[in-house]
Length: 348
Image (cartoon, rainbow, N blue to C red):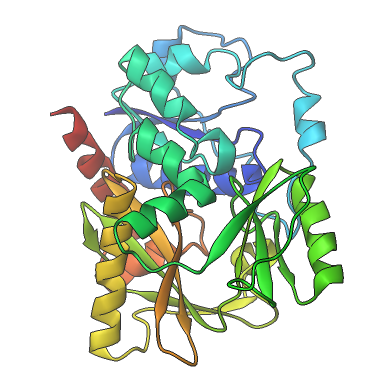
């Protein structure tokens, strides 16, 4: 197949997306596909041949992609590469995607998981991996996701929405400690723990630097897990145990920062319950193809709480979904092919 792997963009998860794209690109090439890796925002410089010939070109499209740094990317420097831009789509991106048999979305964060790219592709008749534009948009908004969870009785921590410029009082149902999260962020960028009124004020200030609306929810003390769901069926559960702090941007993408165990060491009844809740969480927001659901298991009560749905999970060397698939016997290349084939079913 002729496949465009679409990565990059200008979200806070740009660097993660590029590394996901690099790994997917290499896997699909290994699987025999004619594959091109393209940055959503930067696009292609003026090609020296017709676009359709790029699928057969002897070019290593991943050669310039570096590893993920410990800090979120400097987006201003990226935007400066396209002064006066008016579209997220870089030069020739849409044309190249239109020539493909499938676009493998390696986008993360607001550029790829909010449904806008999916909606555009739907209008253009371009086939792509992952869920559709409506479920993407719902899942990207943590406040809306929590509403959908509650509607289908998926357990989720008590939480409220805070709006920039509007006085905020922390409800007793949430209390301290609490977590402050941007509604539409990802990779734990714009996520803060607050232990008292002073740190809450600082956390809100920092979160509002990213977005005008944030979620404040009760902090759940316990163990953290994630569950991939493909075609409505949960994969083995992976446990995430950061060596320091919580599972923030650094701990997610710096090797050796987190201990990850898959399958997670859980009683069978608890594991089955979390997997069932993962499947229900995906159903609540209308997921097609595949996604990943993050959970906390409360230490004192043993209750599990769904935190969010990731509609385009990371595919970096330290990412969780590939580890879950490996526990089932799938290589990374086989996982990419599985995602590709599952996504094609939307168009049959």
